[in-house]
Amino acid sequence: MGKMRFANLPERVTAGAFILYAGLGKLKADEEHAAGVHGMAKGTYPVLDSMDPVQFTRALGASEVALGGALLLPSVGDGLAGLALTAFAGSLLGLYLKTPGMRKEGSLAPSQQGTGIAKDVWLLGIGLGLLADSARCRGRRHGAGE
Image 1 (cartoon, rainbow, N blue to C red):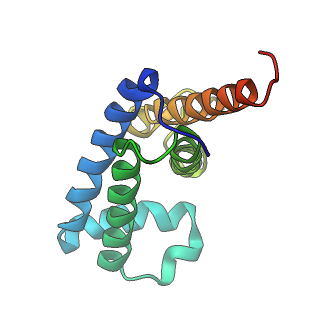
Image 2 (image 1 turned 180 degrees about the vertical axis):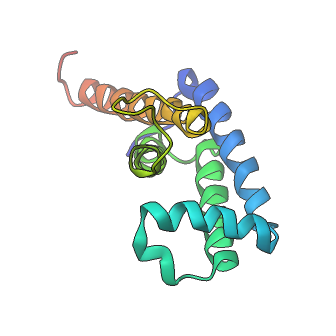
């Protein structure tokens, strides 16, 4: 899906470093922290209920390390990095939209509890921006106009 453009470096480094750091923390999570992460996730995505909390949190951490690393590696094109980041951000926003108490009653606006996850909308914006830029550049290479 193309190359990494230098112009996209700030977004990729910002998101990549943030996600990589979060993932490394989850790899070392103790049982109490893992239970909290797993509890929130399984409340929104019931299919996760049967997973062991520590195993789930470490798998989530490994996927965050992989995503963060992909965003930081120049060899991973903007399109692929954007696709992965958009999917990841979509799951976070799904958590925000489906978890009771995250939003003010009858609104998309975050409650105090939901502000931390609602802020992850910036990851969705970066992912979509990388995808759009990759598609635009691909169109230019194939003779399409802007």
